[in-house]
Length: 354
Image (cartoon, rainbow, N blue to C red):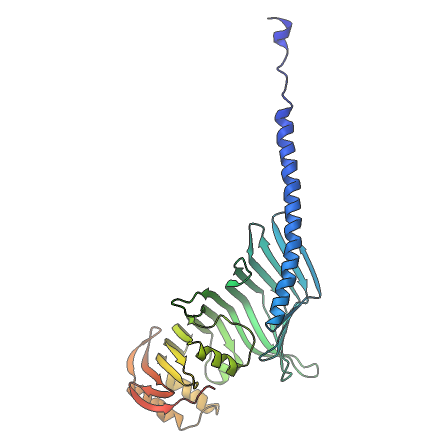
């Protein structure tokens, strides 16, 4: 073996330099793209706030910052506010908001809000407080910024009415979980877009319901579709109903159920309004524990004493069956130009809604 053969092989420095150089170049390019996208995101946020203001929703933020480099965008807002105009004037305030979107999915935004919050009716001056352990919202939009899906979840929700002159607040309602989901339902055959919705509540409690005889935790499930409802601008209720009727809107109730230890209520069906504001459609209702509920309402003075015999008569007309796993009564209601029919027989008139 010669001296040359004993020398170790020479390293090839380009095997190290090239990958490192590529990583540095990619990092510089990625940083530039992120800061460019962040700057564009700031402009898009400002444009979105401007569009919302024109639609009657005024968003505010005492201190706004954008971060999250390198793989996501994080928007932090101190003292966020929302004021609605054009319908019922309301103002919502919270302590802070934190919104996050991943770089590869900027149109999918998840936001968390820190409480407590305050809700004010600017017309009447009444105010309510709210707090929670976790309040999270998420939304998905298309390339134009139009919302496609929206979700809200509130854990350990508490709603209170502020006390006067330093008095403690009065609790109004609590819920272990409240959630709401909506998604855009494109119209077919030239019909306007609608909204599919689903909502639920678990472990609800209310002093008002307790006074009416609905004691114990209340669970609620709501699911359906409202067509011709994609215009979510604030407006008076009568104006919205007129526009909805003119567009041929229909409200479909696929499932509605409210249960408590002593009560169960269910409903399915579909209703609409004609050009005179009269109700049309069909609803199938189910009740378990209805007599006890009416007696509680009677004791609380909410309904006249004459109503109790009417409920007994309805129970005789309805069909016996299961309502959420309990013995109950079901009714078939229909509405024709505002005329209320029970089992096909006219029993009353529903006043025009506008």
